[in-house]
Length: 113
Length: 116
Image (cartoon, rainbow over all chains, first blue to last red; front, side, top):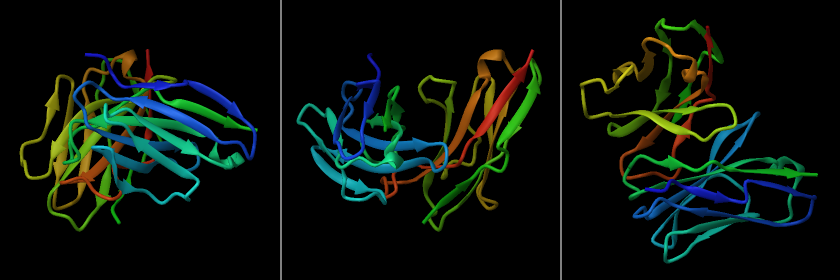
């Protein structure tokens, strides 16, 4: 079974731009979560989607948004990029939301200049 | 809100020896899951082991085992017969049963170095 895939793997943007990251979960998994990983703040939860609905949201500004499609694929969008948004963005999928094990993708490394 | 603390930023062990990584957590919930994830350099995060809080028996996966002390809110990972491929960042993570507004809550990680 194919694992979680994320595209693109690397991205360079400038301040003020927006970016969209994509995540395809493991087949049969309906929950997708997004995390931001930085050296300073570590791993922080962004949001979780299940059945095309955002179920949980972390403590991030409204510039961070996402969505999930009927095939469970998910995208996250960051608008008006700031230097501090430079990070590794990880997507994780699980069968459901009920504390199921989350399986991570390789991440998208975003650099904001 | 729950917190996860990994007090050892870095650990070093000789190949073939045993090492224990520490993790403590704080929660008011009685039912939850605990995880150890491994993130090798520039590679993706993979699950090492998972523990359900309602289970008293400590989880094991081959050379990896945990010491789960619910009352003490402690969840340490023991790696036996350390191998070079075990070198990685190890993250302890918590999630309450039924999901939760915070998703997975991670510790800051422990960088494990394996000396040949």
